[in-house]
Length: 363
Ligand code: NAD
Ligand code: IPM
Ligand code: MN
Image 1 (cartoon, rainbow, N blue to C red):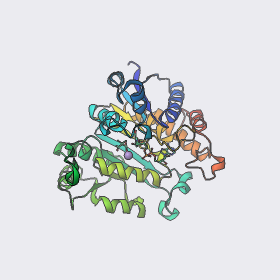
Image 2: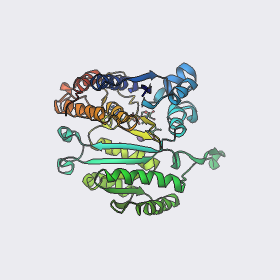
Image 3: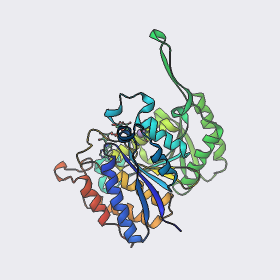
Image 4: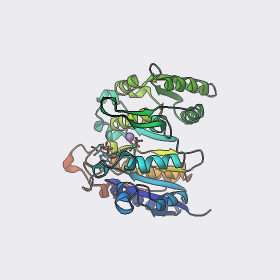
């Protein structure tokens, strides 16, 4: 059983800051559980454009191909926003990586940490004793990838277009994932669509209904995206698993993250049919706070825990990291975004240290 290889792509903005803390916590887990990861860094995103002229240099792609998982930070920022759109970090690096490895299944868990209930912008009677929602987002199709896509014409006739397209097999495989995962949870799936307007979404709803026949033990309901956005704020406890297409999942997962208190808390796993995965915070490079050492590293740390669980089968180590995060939060070691009193907030590295020091084997 050879050492597992991890391609570490920290990227831009707060990416390298929070990645340093995730690596620290992974090292603590290696020491406690006696396994070794072979981590190798690669350039990606805007910093790779600056250094190599391309957001996803060939060397970085081959590093990923030779690895068992990718631990990803975030890419993009104001410095690269004036480049032609298809050269920008998001479209030239992140989306191609998702497509290249067929990472169609994006899991984004948003769970309230009880000591942080007060950090949620929702009223305390709505947060209650905390909610636990898993967004299962289709990640390699839909309007992000549909063809044709482009711009043409000029003057008053100038136009731009994207195509939303879903194939039966694409809907089937993500729906199956949602039902399988719901079986391990509260057995409820809410499929999000816009079947009242979009033909693609009429098809989505139909195929999800067909797949649901194989899961009679799981309760399925359908909800329009606009209503779902509202219902999440009104009563998040009604949800267990949200099954979403690419764009609606993008939007609702940011909303779910903030409902738990901060964008900096939402981890994610992007998986294909093997155990290969890309693990990244759902948030971005946060240019407004980059370079200040104040970003919340928890989303990156929890993404590393998801990597141990989903790609490497290290459930005990994943749990130990999650527990260390819970204990750190309970101890009141909090970055500015989630601290009750900003004067008491700690920096990114202090929070990483606090989590790493709490990684233990015993239950
Ligand atoms: P963002 O998620 O980077 O930031 C939104 C807000 O959330 C900001 O106020 C930011 O400070 C805050 N935030 C995010 N992560 C945080 C953390 N860990 N700790 C504390 N606060 C945090 O979204 P944006 O501003 O719309 O995007 C900035 C750039 O990041 C854009 O170029 C965008 O395309 C890119 N982006 C990249 C990814 C990715 O690489 N996976 C994801 C989303 C956005
Ligand atoms: C996310 C991000 C990406 C997306 C962007 C940066 C391409 O917002 O992972 O949520 O839209 O999928
Ligand atoms: Mn997003």
